Image (cartoon, rainbow, N blue to C red; front, side):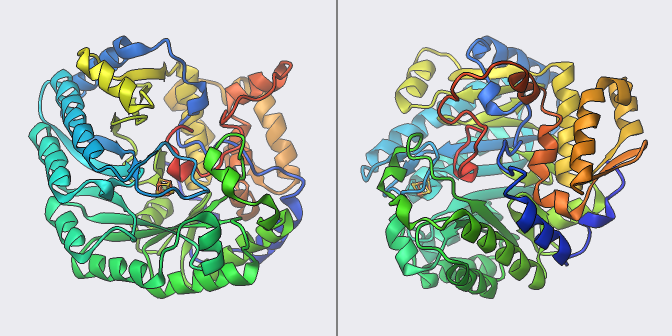
Length: 488
Ligand code: SF4
């Protein structure tokens, strides 16, 4: 934890910073990794295997009784949204999820067996896909299996992603009964023409009903996702969507940029590129959205995230203990995170591990009595150091140099001479302020924070220092809808 940066406190966003952002964004590329992990997932390799994961679980076991974080991936969706870049299975055959639930329970038992004792869980998240593709009995079975092996703390954060088109009041009752206390809803845009173009037709009333049910049932937090840069969007049209969302007053809002990469994500081939807003319009949509949300009292947390001032994310940022994990910004990201289900990523005892991406490979590994890990990475001391620096800059907008030196046993100036020279270039563009004691992100820098974080990414620096091959598909350099993709 470090002293908060005064520029990240409060709800009002500096209007001059928005004007500077508008003029700078074309020159300084804001694209880059989102650093939901460091090293980023495109650096994972397939040499780690389940042996590496077993070692990590052994270390995690030694760390008991520290609480854990869990991520469960439910990959099924009934319909395709054309913008989607996540790992999902489109099917109307609900018998497929029954089999999946069996294997999920087997994976839980296998992992929990390695941990040696029932561990407390402070944070759990069901993502997808569409977790509510599971029928009520299947959801009960998954939750029962979780509770058999883990102790889900009632004071913890237990969240689930909801597709408002598929969730009834009765299902909301069930979610509350099962112990979920937070929900996140995909909205993207309420404009009918945009919805038709992306093949996701969802009425305002469906969304409103879910929010009202969540309030009635006492859910602690409702989070809404929007996407800008979709076909037919204009600044005025998207502003109308934002205003309708503001009427619902969600606790958190995520506003993601759509990246059109039809060569990477096949469903995007069904989007007519000629209908996408031009780059300048897209930038206007973003600036207008930030203005609207901050004027309505939301705090700009960073990257794509906004929260009400009394939401835990905003409090954590004000107090300097905000963190990042695979779900983006988080308040309990310091725990080992166990990933369960196809393609799920875990972060355990200095290791990142990712499960097989297809159900066939996932089932085959479990049938063979193996953990279904296919790739990952064991962090080096340098990875830990840079992760801490990137996290401090992205979450709290400030880096206490003496604290980093003390915690990691380094001399900052000599270890990061090249990085500091690059930071001076960004300082000339008013993205950062640098003193011998601190690095601070300016209000303008907060809008381009990944550009600042990239300075400390050793892997990107090494890439830049050698001749570049053609980039592989989805290599993490240009990041599309990562909210829906656990792979970067
Ligand atoms: S955006 Fe969500 S609901 Fe739509 S296809 Fe992707 S995972 Fe499924």
